[in-house]
Image (cartoon, rainbow, N blue to C red; front, side, top):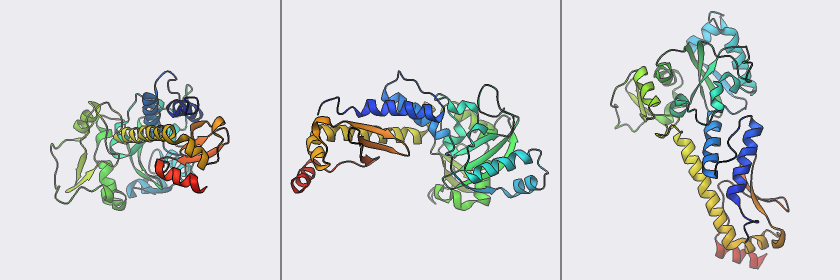
Length: 308
C-alpha cells in the first residue's frame, strides 16, 4: 500500500502534539516520533489523572487536620475534597511537571507526589504558589493516601519515612512490591540526603529496606538519563506496536481492506488518541484496533476474507 495510506509514525507524532496542547503543555513540533513520544510520556507520567479516588490519611495527620491543629488544615481538607470528587490536583504540583526535561525522582522511584499547600495562584501559570510546607501523597488508580507534610528541606524527597508509613499503616497497598523472601537486606545503607543525592546524579537504588522488609520501588525507578523506567518501557511497547502495524498493513493491506469492507482506493490508516491509542481508517471512520492489539497473521486473514 502507498505511503499516503500508511504513515502511522507521523500520524502518532502529530496526534501526540495535538493531545499535549489540549492537556495544557507543549512538546516540540520539530522532533521525530521517538523524542516526541518520550517527551509526551514523561510529562503524562508526572500528572495525576483526573478521576475520583478514595481518600485515606496517615492517622496522625488525620488527627491534626480534622482537629484544626495542623497549620495547613484548610488547604489539606480542600485538596482531599478535590481528590474525592475527581477534580484536577495537578496545579498543586510543581509547575516544572509540564517540562519534559524535568524528572521528579520521587514519582519515578516511589510513586509519591508532593503538593504545595497554597490557595494563591501563581500569576504566570495556573499552578499555586510554592510554599515551604509540602504535602506528600501516594497515588494509584483508585486511592490517594495523604502520608504527611514536611518542610522543603535537604533530603526530604529521599526520606524513607514516606514508604515506612505505607509499610506500617497501609500494608495492603505496598504488599505487591515486596522483594523475594530470600532478600533480607540491601547495600549500601543510605540516609535520606544520600539517597536524594544518588537520585539527583541519575541513579536508581531499586530497593528500599523498611524495618527488615525489602521493597522494590513502586515507581520502578529511572534510567541514567533521568527518564522513568516505566516511561521508557511504555515508549518501547508503543513503538513496537506501530512497527508491527505498519508491517502488517504493508504486507496484508488489501486483504485487511477486504475483510473490513473498506474500499481500497480510498483507504487511509492513522493513529488516534483519546482514552487510548487506536488504529482507525479515517475515510470511513472505522475503529480497527486498540493498543496493543494486532491483525491476524496473513494466512488467517486470507482464510477469513475467503469466507466473508
